[in-house]
Length: 199
Image (cartoon, rainbow, N blue to C red):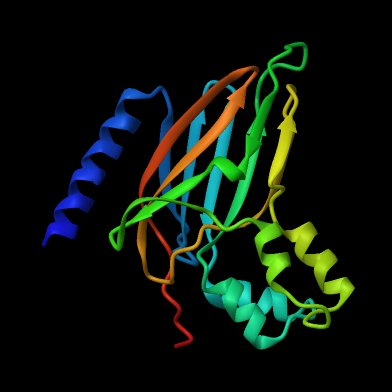
């Protein structure tokens, strides 16, 4: 009960954190797949996070040379398709930088904040011979850069990130970015990792 109360209190804090920021967060559901997406917009910063089912991610990496075990490990770490865009006019000097090292998440099981799992962390876990060089390259290209600068004029990129929670887990995500030299942040609350329907 104490842990539940902690979680409810944190949820309330997150709600007011988002409410007081200038960020707009739009939630939508794909009619065909029923997968959920969240779009955060603040000035010229746009972030879209789209659920990927464990089945999708598992199949994707197995098709690129990962063993069933390693593909399953990635797939069950709450993978989201991630798109970042700088919508500022091209003649502006207002670049945006994103570092996933700063991003944090929170779940009911853990009332504090935990870092998301970076692509470099995955690579460090794989021993030599676990996957081929071609599979490693495919993983690097398919995953979102840990750090990137987005220039004005519509500069964007996309790729997968591993948040960390298990399938069918609710969580809050704390995202950070820099607009010029100013650090900004926002909570995206009440997100959810898709259930693993293959189980």
